[in-house]
Amino acid sequence: MSIYGNIIIIANIISYFMNKNITIKTEFIRLGDLLKFANIASSGGEAKVMVTLGLCTVNGEPCTMRGKKLRNGDVVEVAGTADREPVQLTVAGPAEGNDN
Image 1 (cartoon, rainbow, N blue to C red):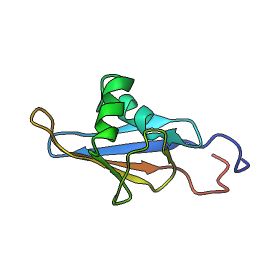
Image 2: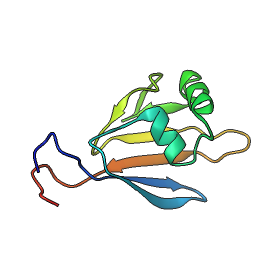
Image 3: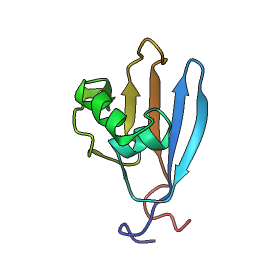
Image 4: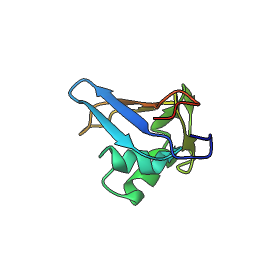
């Protein structure tokens, strides 16, 4: 598989009450889409608000770009709110050059 082909990315969602894996088949996923796909945000509008309010960090740095491309090894943390526990999402995929 070339570096321009599809890569399987797994987002491991880890929080106090939640622990599940999500698999997608793309080279990257945008932050807002990951929040929706992982059921952290119920809509694109909610994801936009979460990111705009600074509730998300990517690799330990505050991120206010909901279009931020997340790739293998990126770690997203979402701060908890009154009705939701904090969540940590780790993007993982196969090693580069892997033909799987």
